[in-house]
Each structure stands twice: as C-alpha cells, then as structure tokens.
Length: 157
Image 1 (cartoon, rainbow, N blue to C red):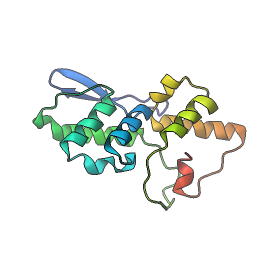
Image 2 (tube, rainbow, N blue to C red):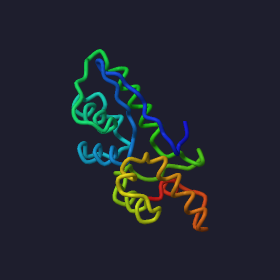
Image 3 (cartoon, rainbow, N blue to C red):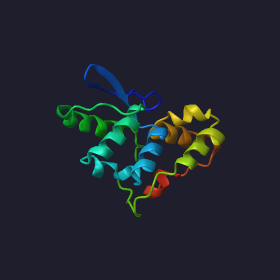
Image 4 (cartoon, rainbow, N blue to C red):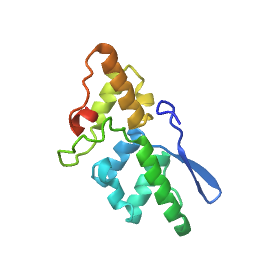
C-alpha cells in the first residue's frame, strides 16, 4: 500500500463494512471529543465511550452499533489504522524530548491548503502520513528541507 494512496482498514460489523482511515478530520474529531493528544488515544480504548468516538472518527460516520464480541477485533483494526496513518520517523535514533501535545490541526490545514495548494476538503481527508510526506517533498523541492535532528523536526507542525 502506498503512503500516497492509503487504503482504509476494512472492518465488518454485523452485515455492514466500514473503512478506517486516520485522516486529519479524524484527528480533529478525536482530539476535540476526548481532549487528549492523538498520540495518547490508545490509553483510552478500554473505555467504551472513547472507543466509540475513535471508531466513529476513523470510519468517518456517525454512531456505529457495536457488538461486544467484535470489540477485540475492532481494537486491533483501530490500532492498525492509527499506525498506518501516523507519519513515519525518518531516523529511529531521534530522541523524544517533550511532553505529548495535541496535533496542530489548524497548522496542518494551513500547510495543506496554503502551502501545498490542495482544496480544504481534500486536506481534511488526507492521512497525516500523506500530508507530511507531501510537505517534506515540497521542502526538498524548494530547498528548505533539513534532515531531522529531534522528534520535533520530524513533525514540523
């Protein structure tokens, strides 16, 4: 699967199929409804209400009827969708130096629309990985790219 054309993680609940994708829109919904940084969302998946919020945001739909027997499988699929949607670190040796904070959705939207020139609707539906990959390529093309020295440099938002 290409980072530029991410495919949703398919889940089946009852007789319906849904696709899970960590888009900028999903990040905004999760952070504003749970009040925590996206990097800490896994700590709340054992709470049913938080689980529903995350699942609905990743599937980009309203409330989903969840069957108790599906929860373990859904947790695995949510984890997979979160991992696939997050930006990749360029170097494994980069130290994490600061406390987690909410992902700067407004800045990401600015970069996607103003810097990269995408329509707002398209930026909202991009994964963080795709958006930051395009932004990195833009910086390489314009000569402003510097290899990351800290984790703060990997996600330059």
